Image 1 (cartoon, rainbow, N blue to C red):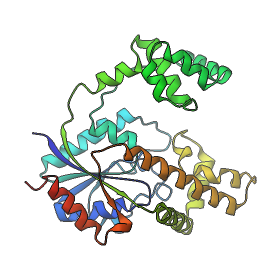
Image 2 (image 1 turned 90 degrees about the horizontal axis):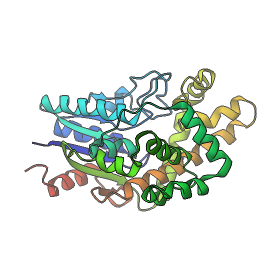
Image 3 (image 1 turned 135 degrees about the vertical axis):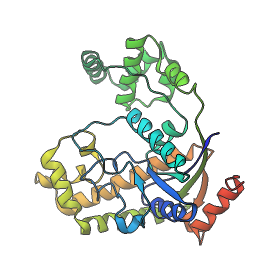
Image 4 (image 1 turned 120 degrees about the vertical axis):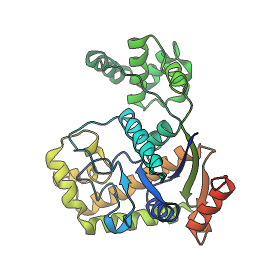
Length: 310
C-alpha cells in the first residue's frame, strides 16, 4: 500500500505555511518541510520558518536541525524525509509535505535514488578551469558528443550542472541522462495529492513579497544576516536569499535601502523561478489565491476530487 502524501507547493510568500497548518489540524496531520534553507539553524527570519504561534501546535519536521557549518545534499534530504514520512504514517497521522524547493520535492515524491560517488576534487577543478576558459556554449558542444539529451536541456550559464554532467561520465562511464533514468527504476512509495498555491496576477504576489521583506527587517533580519556574514561558515547557507544581499552593506559598498531593494528583487526572481519549476508538473492542482475566497475549502475540494477521502 502506498502512503498517501499531501503536498503543498508554490512560490515563496504564497501562503503555504498557513494552509498546511490548517489542513494538518483538520486532517490529523504532521508537516514535513521541503525547504532547502529552513533546515539550518540561525536562519529563522531569512528562511521564513514558522514560529510557534504560526505552527498552532502542529509538529513540524526537518526544520532548524542543522548547523550552518554542516553540508547537506539533496540525497541527505530525501533519505531523512522518507524516514519522517514513514514514521508519521505509522503513527496513524497524515504526512503533509510543504515547501518551495522544487528539486527536493521532485527527488522525494518521484523516489529518485542517488549514487554514492566520491567527489574527485582534482577532476572538478580541471573541469571548472576548462569551463572558465572556453565558456558554457563550448562545454555544451563537448557534452553533446556523448550526452546530447543533457546538452539540449542545460543552459550555457548553468556551470554547476554542466560540470556535473562531465564528472559523472568521466567517473562512471555512464551519462548523467542514463543515471537519471536508472534513478527512477524503483516506483515511488507515495500516492501524492499535490496542491499548488499561486496568483493569476503576479503583481499581487510581488507586493506580498515586498511586505514580507519589510516585516523581516522589523523582526531583526539585519542582525541575523550580520551574524551569517561574520561567520560565513557554509557556502550554501550564506548564499541564502535574505542574508547575502546585505553583505555589500556590511562592507560599506551599498546603502541599507539598496540592500533591502536588492533583497526584494532577488526574492521576486526566486518566486518566478519556483513558479516556472512547479508549472511544468501537470500533477499539481492549482489554487489561485486571487480567485478564491476560502483556500482551505478549495484544498478540501481538490482532495475530494482526487479520491483522498475514499
